[in-house]
Image (cartoon, rainbow, N blue to C red):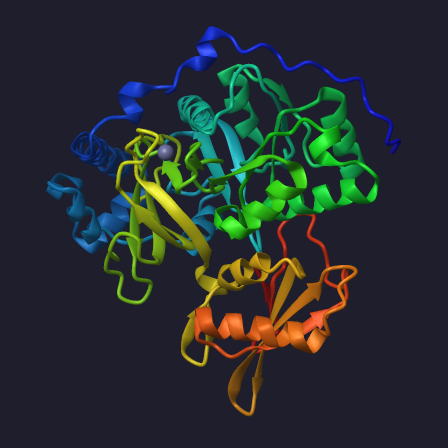
Length: 458
Ligand SMILES: [Zn+2]
């Protein structure tokens, strides 16, 4: 790619409508009591709807001796059985095409996303026209809260092939931004698109934003000078909620990074960061959140880590009642400095499956990521290797020193080992590699090599 400057496009002039602070102030700034009252009302109706229209729920609730009419408070939901991905997969195979959690005939389904799924057949997630419109409507609201405006040129660089992140671009379009359906294209092509359009915002995974910024630099393009991207939306990995990771991406791009959270089984985005970036505002009018201790199933206190369990509140095609997402998260219901009052996801710390138990201590890759990325003598890439040595778990952390550094690797390793021990309480072997030794992610980074099971995760 030529490094000659593209003709500089002037930013579009913001219109008066762009100065509006909230997309839907009557929703976004309501009181906690109003949120909870609405959640209860929607939950009661939604449980009745699921029971009355989806054969799976009728059978399951009857077997568990619970009935929607018994729900008088939000706490009553806890008497209903949990659901997980295995159930979705099994019911889809038992009752093709969409499984018997679906509550409408296939004729009413207009869109289906598929989760890539690490094992077996992808599970399908159906939407009615109304479900789809609801989603795009609150997607625009989340984007607005992140500062996206009609004056932006927004490049959507996510996969469009059955992936639920694809249609999120329509939220930007609904908001009025010039929306560039870039998709997942080779990095030189994407850089060319960003340059031609002088895109002011884009969405990728955190690893890819990092990779793309580094790739640009290697090709003589300085994203801060030669590109116009000032907002980067990220999702799909914990990195977007780790301040150290955001800071490294922001330094490369001269842009602000906003973390988003979504899942194929529900909506492409369920929550997103506002300008304050103190957590992700949850679309609480569509999805009810529980955070449970993965071992006891009891709710954890606000701010504590627990497993995310979600219940849809309006989705007609396929209600999900108490769906175990498999992510370990923390939440707050404190109002945000931005004036919005919805619950905020404080962070996704990892998958339940990625929780490494090293000699009895729980560790997530995101814990190590925060440490490695704070220290600028390292490139920020890392990999965790877990082995069993003499019947004991042994954690190795592989990192790369930055180019041109003269500090002896042993000294770097000792320093990082000390920081990991201080923060996590776990002693780790640190292996310092040359720059560019570790594989670069173009989608989701593989960060864990757990040789105790021989399976790649994360
Ligand atoms: Zn906020």
